[in-house]
Image 1 (cartoon, one colour):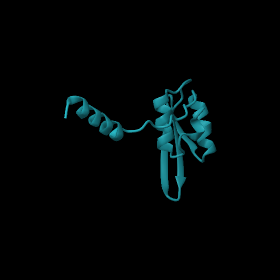
Image 2 (image 1 turned 90 degrees about the vertical axis):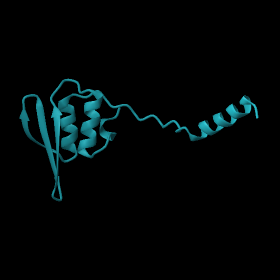
Image 3 (image 1 turned 180 degrees about the horizontal axis):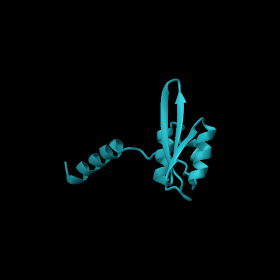
Image 4 (image 1 turned 30 degrees about the vertical axis):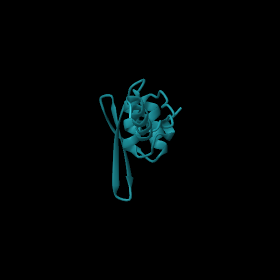
Length: 97
């Protein structure tokens, strides 16, 4: 077998074993800390306290307490917003554009 045949078989195997492209996730909105606070309040979170520019939001469900810290900034970065969505347990849906 020549190198061309070997390369053809290797390419066929590699294309089969490579991960497929995922569907693109919707982008997150550009939100302020106050807007995120209102979204969390609509999902059962309550404002607890504020230390400097960071607000503490808390939700209690059947004994489980979820606390989320939200920066009170004009614009939250995408990574911060994604982390808040994950920590709160409400998912990305309310934060998507």
